[in-house]
Image (cartoon, rainbow, N blue to C red):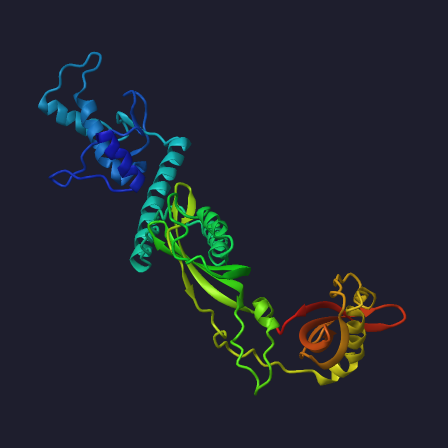
Length: 403
């Protein structure tokens, strides 16, 4: 234990502890080794003041030690021997510490002070910049398997076609079609009086509202065609009635084609989706909701005037299937359906901008089916250069007024 205290005191360069009476307590030191009494030591004048006590103690010890032909000293003789012994004759000598020991002491001292300094710096920084508390990880929730939306839409669409199609001449055909998508044992003839005729032309599945417990409601839009009975013949101011029409009432019948909505309840059971019961016919909106107006654009009238001929030439070739002959190199623009011819180009405006690519809006009138129909396109022009000339050509065409 005393050795560990001595080493730590040497590393920290602390003073030696003192006794109760103010004198230094002798502590064994590896740098002070015992020497023969006959070996001369350094003169007293060269002994440091801090080691003078060790020199005096050596002198007293030498005076008390018995030698050859020497008798046991008395107290008086010890005092006389102490006085007669030269200060230079001491049983100790001072040796320099080895270089390795000095290096180890310096390294240990540096490491110790480095650890102290690091602890101080870390502590001060934690006082000023407190570490941010760790954010708790988001809790993971097991939502289970998602509802089979696509399967529900397919089942509801097939059911809607079967449900809204009927023919009084073959009522069993409707019942058999409904049985494919309803639970086993369901009465598929219930809810229809087995009269009339109706045919489904188009079925369009829409939103699926998940209700929980593996149940959902599917919206289906259906286009149906229903032959309506001709109105009663009221005659025409005494004119004779045409009795031939009475013989064939189908000649006076007219077809009514209309859209209707159908909401179908479904449930997922035994690995598939089935219809749980009677659906309900609902209306179809007559118009869409209000939407924000598109952002206004600043037009480059001068550039539009310079490129009007390019647009006219392109759309005149567009309907004939030869658009690529006047399009920019590398552009791939499929031809329009046959039977369309160019009517008029009513408007061509180019957005403000610069560079080798410019975008504009064109309104075109097409002649198709004996009528003229107006269409809007967004057209991208690109600048094509060659050794002889430089011109603008159409690189892309997209329908609709989009950014």
